[in-house]
Structures are given as structure tokens and as C-alpha cells.
Image (cartoon, rainbow, N blue to C red; front, top):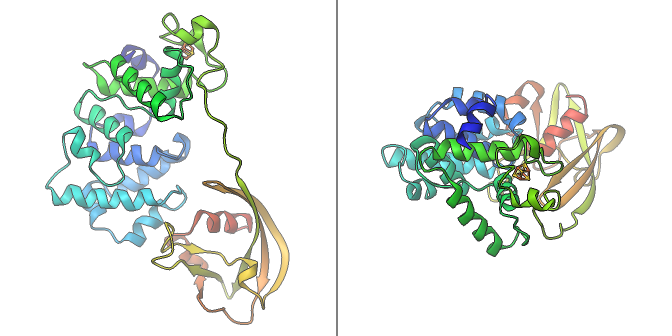
Length: 319
Ligand code: SF4
């Protein structure tokens, strides 16, 4: 399998290193964000924070601004907490258990870092690996249940090549991302085609079995772009408010009861966990900034941690 990877690997920036810090950053970024989006963020972030000490010492607002656009900001906060833990203990931990104990690091990330940076034999099981393993072993149980997940983790650990665990883990992830696709798996190109139970039974399209997806809650809202003398009206979320504490938002129309609401500038859709938003962006005018809002110069926007909704809103409004 690792041999297949040697021939098929994509040249991605985080594949050119064994530095555990760089691998951790890439794995955290890739947790909920696609490879194509992560690439430029990864390079920029590491240019600014080339090691844990650099991130540990940075102001949180600056880190969030660097992360702005990747979403799921808890990851950035946890990464900074992890960097501080690395600095406090005098160096990057070298065992799976210690890596797993870093803030924001789950089983998957710990296994990926431990195997790729230190060659430790731990199978990294993400969504791609669950799909591949379920197909190879012909697992017909619901992969969203704990029982089946645990079974697949054991199978993945059994398949792991102990001599090249890092390459092996990356190979299975790569296989899931490029060959054993959710729809239309490319079995003829697969190194496991002769031992795959799902293919032998002709049920590769039906696996993995997943419980029914819950319907998202639909929400319609109107965001306003209010401009005055080259500045835009924004509100910073309070420190205790939520996971987006400290981020800046555009005002919603309902927050500006005295505003003159004008033309539609654009529309976009946005999903956060179970909420599917349909957002209309409108120009608006106010006589004075309501309580809690501030005028922010357009040239200062790039340095602010904007919520993804605000970023999309400004984009839809032509900023
Ligand atoms: S043979 Fe097909 S279904 Fe089985 S692991 Fe390979 S690509 Fe996936």
C-alpha cells in the first residue's frame, strides 16, 4: 500500500516535511477544510508562525485574523493553546499519548502526527479511511455508530504497515480522496481491488452505510452594508459570547430599526452546523452608529478577524 502511495501521491506542501509542528498545523487546518482551500493558508500561516514558540507568543486577535476564511475558529484557538503547551514542556511531544493530550488534538490528528513525524505505528482514521476500510472489509453496519467505528478502527490498525506507518496512513487517506471515492469508486485503479470484500460482492457503491442525515434548520436573514466616509459599520462579538468571541460581524437589518434599508447588493448561502442560512445583503444608511457598533476603515478590514458570514457578506456586496 505504501508502495502504491510512492507512485500516486499528490505533491502537497505538508507532504514535504517531517517537522511535527508543520504536520500538526496541516492536520488541524485539514480537519474541516478542503485540501484546495488549505494550501495557501498553510504556507502563509507557517511563514508567520514557523514554530510553536512564534504562535505561542502571538496576540490572539492576530492569530484569528490569519485564520479568517478557514472557519471553525475553535481550531485556531486550540492550536495556539497547543503551541503554548509545547513551549511550556520544552519541545514537541514524541509519544502518541502526549500528542493526543495537546488541546484540540483528537485520536485521528494524534495518530497522523505520531506516524508521519515520528514513525509510530498508529492508524489514523478519518472519514476517508472509514469509507475505504468499510469497503475493504465489507462492513454493512452503520458507520456512524460507536460500535462499528470501534470495529473499523481495529481493522485499520491491523492493516497498518508497521515499517512505514506514516506513508501507510497517508496512502489510505490518499486512496479515499482520489480512488475509493464516495460515489463511483475507481476500483480498477485500486491496489486493494483483489482483496476488497465490497468489490467482490459488487456492493462498493452501497457502502459505507450511514444513518439518515438530519435535516438542517433553514434561516433567512438580511445583512446590511452601511458605509460612511470610507468606513463600514461592524460589531465585535463580546468576549463571553460564543465560539466566535472577538470576531467582527456585519449588522443584521433587525439590529438597525432606524436605518434606511436600500438596494439588494447580493445574496449567498452559508451553513453552520445544523443551520442553513440564505442571506440577502443590502445597502443601508443610518444617522448615527447604534450602540455596540463601530465604524471600521475599509483599509483596516484585512487585519480584522471577520466572521465567515461577514466576509461573505462583504464579498457579495462587492468589497
Ligand atoms: S476495490 Fe474499490 S471499493 Fe474496494 S477499496 Fe478499492 S476503490 Fe474502494
